[in-house]
Image 1: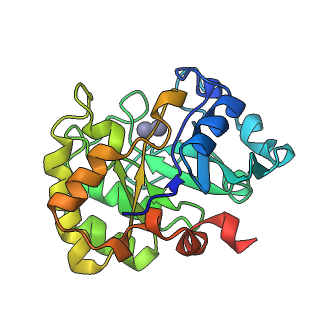
Image 2 (image 1 turned 180 degrees about the vertical axis):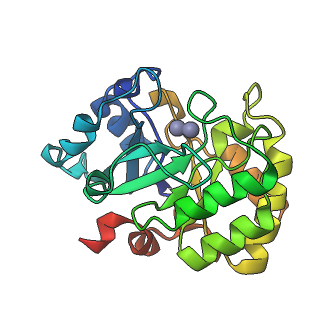
Length: 239
Ligand SMILES: [Zn+2]
Ligand SMILES: [Zn+2]
């Protein structure tokens, strides 16, 4: 499968990642990406950027090294109403926003409560991707998640880092099998992301590709193979 997109990565600005924007963009260019996203952790994550960091992203050019570089945020879902940790007027300025559950910011609840949190977050017009909804610590109703994502035109992420040996997100492959089965049923598009915290991991998607291929997942539902389709799902394309 053609794959020229990686929308979820972090630089030193996130506080627990190790390369600069320029180093990450060079890695993206070297690996043949056409659309590359930098999505720092939003302010509720200990050690990450303040809101002002995100409000000033306008100073950065979106074309670098001959590729399109999108700047956004990986938001923290904070409650079962799907509230996140940047204000709407800041989200409106970002190229893209991923909403994720992280243990330092959200303790989660029952399957019904977590599913509600994701579905409510998806109703936010400035949230484009649900990040790593594969974590056994946050059980989810994948049928409801995939149906909601299709309705709201939000992408569900297949996160390569979650699938890597040693990931602290337990049983991700098993959860992705359930999610992808539901995505096939509702024609819900997915995006494969590296979630790189170091330049060596940019565009590393091999475990996700392996899983999609095992499941015979339809290529037309994978936006990595169809960059033109991506703009439909992001703020970037609406400008
Ligand atoms: Zn995350
Ligand atoms: Zn991340």
